[in-house]
Amino acid sequence: MPQLPGIRVYDIKKIPDERGFFAEALREDWQDFLEGDRIVQANLSFSYPGMIRAWHRHLRGQVDYFIVLKGAMKICAYDDDPSSPTCGQLDEIIASSERLQVVRIVGKFWHGTKTISSDPSTTMYMVNRLYDYKNPDEERRPWNDPKIIDPKTKSPFDWNKPPHK
Image (spheres, rainbow, N blue to C red):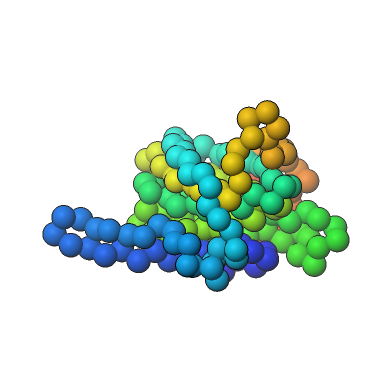
């Protein structure tokens, strides 16, 4: 269960029939989940097994909504704001096509993903701010930045650490 404020996971209801299934990915009336956001752009991302896409954040109010359509991903968010009551907290969420969910990541937190399935992952993610090609709302850090500390181990976060240890 996520602990950082605004980070949420919402189970998506699949409605199966003889053709396959139907699911509502996101609805404007899910305001308890959206917290007033309006989705303005949808993107697709394909990642090979083991691919890490981290760390980055958005400081102008962008919120990301991830749905893993194929494969499985670890989605992480980290708070390094010294004035925040959750400073040093890290949320790790496992999302997969086996259990459709939409994962809400507040952009002010450093966040990233790793494909953890043996097959590539395909992710649809939606945002509440249009991407500005001339002035992107994005700060970046290396995927293995030693300043991002795992609160469980008190060591730099290790994307490749086995999940059972």
